[in-house]
Length: 145
Image 1 (cartoon, rainbow, N blue to C red):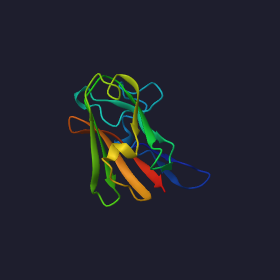
Image 2 (image 1 turned 60 degrees about the vertical axis):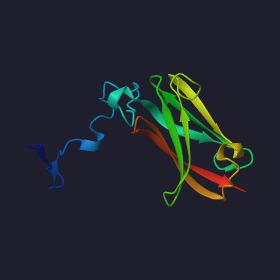
Image 3 (image 1 turned 60 degrees about the horizontal axis):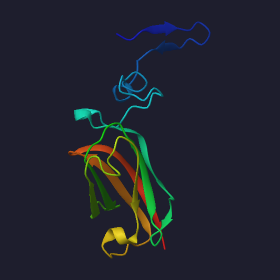
């Protein structure tokens, strides 16, 4: 039962409803990075610390962009790029232990050559980072022409 408290100054009753379920592991999770930032997924040891970020963003398709992310352990990684309508544009695979799938900070570079000669129109694209079907992180890419 939540605790209640009466305030004689205002006449309002203050009720402590506790922390919402979806926030329950923030700051208290033993798997957090010490800053209260819990990984998106902590199943099967798959863990991406913090959020993946790409730079530059927005970027010119001709010059490309780099997605940076921090992995807790070596793991197979899949990076998928989608249109805002959910259409899969391209899927990239990186094997555990290779650059982009090692424990620690990783960078994954995408250039116009990464898309098999297909042109990307200006606009917003979405990407996901997964391992063994578990969503580790996601973000947005803004392409300029």
